[in-house]
Image (cartoon, rainbow, N blue to C red; front, top):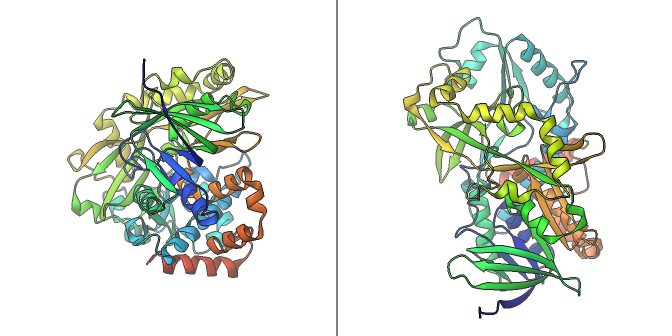
Length: 497
């Protein structure tokens, strides 16, 4: 007979040791320090999947340069409401990080955040007209004050010399620039947050623990069954609240919970690769995150960008990402992840979404088939003088886009993040990808309000929340003085030059 599973009890179980669980755990500990928490991670280290710097396609998504957040309308106008919302949310994340630095919880902000200008660059008269229209709409908004637009080649040479060298003089192009953009290393940030949480007596981190099942008990609590991947030992953990923040694997675990709210959700995995520069002289000659327009049929996370990063204290330069298709839901997942996610409740939405996105499927397969020289051709649109010897291919992380029921189409593919929770708020899962990590703080605060409604209503909770996020509940875009005050505080605390 096998050994009986060990049993334990906590208030909260957080599944996955990435930026979402780290953020939620930190918020809970600040707002309700009496709550007991266990963080469960399948791998032997934290932040090794989507939160890792080399796996993450967007670091510091604040809608300053990402053109997919400002779609062009049929009449030629540009819709910017999503960009305003994301910019507001990123400022909330920065306020929380600034608070943690001021309190000494995060010791050295330069390890996870640096100021790097955010730019959009387009080529050809049609896209230049789009960027003009986008700039005209955005620069009127308070959150985008300071955005600069130019078609002047001399100015562009000063901003992005790496992209201008070797470019035809008669090529039509334009760019916008926001100096206050940032690069965020979410892997480093996650490790710092969890390192702090581990100093608390009522918070435990369990590595090499694979969640095998999630069941509802008669008393309303959840039983999370885990297996130690080193020893084979099984455990059963009872918790009043469970958060599933396991990246691509969240969908599979959400299905195990059996909550009716999970029915109809499916997942579409999208892989990726980078070109990583190995030439230090080239790396040091570029200092910006420059985003272009996505190819027709490309998913939003595949918007091409020539991207300055700071990883382990070193400046790096990446181009991509190049999308691809795999049935894995995680970089270190199983090829059976996609088939295992298909249930009677979601097969119709998944088939419908697949039929409505055949162009996307074709695009992903084409991307997978690209050779290194094909990848170089894409880079040369940004950097005409690029040579393959100066770059190497890096495998990026896996993203699982949300497929959900739709009364009109049967099923639709969503490119964003979505929180799915039970009616009583006792279990919740985060599905999807971009903008994800950059908006982790407001996402998790809203989740707490939904899942801990009584605590969230208390005066003590609200007072503490305003200490963490001074602008919470107010619109920075509508209040220039508050926006300036908040940004100045964040800049000082986070040591943004």
